[in-house]
Image 1 (tube, rainbow, N blue to C red):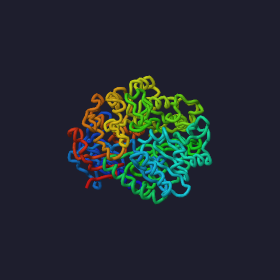
Image 2 (image 1 turned 45 degrees about the vertical axis):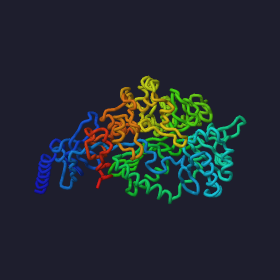
Image 3 (image 1 turned 30 degrees about the horizontal axis):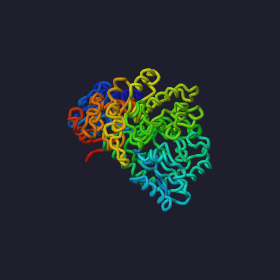
Amino acid sequence: MRSFCVSNAKLLFICLMVWSLGVHAQSSLIMKYADTVLINGKVITADDDFSIAEAIAIRDGKFLAVGNNEEILATAGLETRRIDLRGKSVTPGFIYSDGDNAIPGGDLVKESQWGGTIQGRIGGETIEQVEQTITYIAENEADENEIIFLKVSDQWAGPMLETWDKSRLDELSPNNPTMLLPDCCHAIANSKLLELMTQEGFPPDHFHLIKNELGEATGQLGANAVGFVGRELRPFPPPEWIQEHGLDAAKEEMANYAAAGITTATGHMSGLTVLILNRLFKDGDLRIRVHPGLDLMRQNPFPVRTLARVGNIMDFALVDERGPMVQIVGTAVGPHTGAPDAAISLMTIEPKSNVIPELGHNPHGYDRWSAELFTGKGTEDLTLEELQDTEYYNLMLARQFGYNVNGVHNMGSGGIALSMQAIIDAENIPVKYVPELSRAQALDHNIDWVQENYDFYKEHEAELKDKIRFGVSLGTAMRQRDADILGYEDVIELQYGWEGLERMAPLKSLVDNGIPFHIEGTDPRNKPMKIVKDAVTRIDRKGRVVAAHEALTREQAILAITRWAARFMSAEDELGTIEAGKWADLVVFDGDILEDPIETIDQIPTVLTLVGGRVAYEAQ
């Protein structure tokens, strides 16, 4: 009798389940109702077909289903949140790949620091004013014997790096070890700092410790020497700075990203950044995903020591119900090409049509990896021993330990060429502790492509296609930088001419050549729909159309900051589209971003941002 009762109870339960599923599930089984449904919208999935849906169901932080209203409402229960979109547009969350400074401390190696804490960039409209400021800081604000780090505008890099040495800095700051940073990868050290570097173990014969004909250190430092000072000698910021300028400022910046519809930021980031991210996550204050490329290898003169101690921590993540919120997606090596408004300049295959001495004497720009500004050598000119003191070697070691690189600036065509060859070289090293990379090599800040770059990619496509991704800095071309201090405007056009400007950010050509890229986003002020507008119209800040033949369609432009940006991080299986099974990162716009006039698309407000199905921003 007892077994009969149990069997009937089971049968009753099964019957009830079948009835429930028939009423509520239609074509799919539902063991649990959706947490949120959004209906009556224009859902731009950004999938392979660029399909448009009407509604979305979200459960446990992921997209449960995408379809029409009837299908999605069938997944809703009594406690499901229902959002009537009333025709509003929905897109996947936007992914910004130049998020180095999304968190304060993102590029700590080159920040000013004295008086026991991080300081702002020192100003001055003339070099004489900069000199006076240095003297004042050394005499009145720096603590006794502490190292003074002085970050100045990189527009001063030419006049300072080409004419200054330790003797000039000794006059201005005789008592404190001092480093002047007009550029992230080139610096001037005074005599006291050179002595301290030797005492603390920097190799006296290192290639980036520049010497004169007599074999004496000049005070000029290349990238890995700069990195040694920043890594080994720079004091960590005090707790009060971390609280006020780190945690508090980061929370505000995360809110700004979410309000713009940006749900993921990635880029090269320092140990201080990761510390702050960890705190934000543990305190429940991390609104968006931040996926760092750790600065483990960036300007690191002791890369073997670092990797042997740290090992491989690729893909390690801080995870909650929204999925991976902080996830290691690579390491970084330093950039080998500069900015167009600074003396290091773009590293290009085609020469400048107009050489402006203050913006660099070299018509092809300078190679930062080889400290070419000081050494006169490019990476291809170095001996094997010299290469081991450069970022090229760090990239090889990163590959050996199973790290891809990201956050590597390749603005010029020469930098792009060097990167592609280096990545091929890295795959051919004889010893690899990790046979296959978990993510592709991700190179950013690309703007200058020439036919030689396209030809090289085509020739080596089998070696590069699944190994490399490019980020294109469209904003640099559409809003040319000015060398304000030096009195120059539109410095790309000024140095490379209109023809040179028109080859910058060649989006359509990259599509046509099958080269995997996305458009970089930086900070939330550069709103996603502004990027879409620029990519489609190619209208610059002066109202001119620049390279109309390189325009994308509106659909391609949206893909370039969603699905293609996820591909840049090798996260296309998790992010970048609205598809069942992916993390529910989305943005709701109060307008139709596919049909509204392209000229005003950047004015459409964001009304809702979800990250992992949780509200990160909601308009009041």
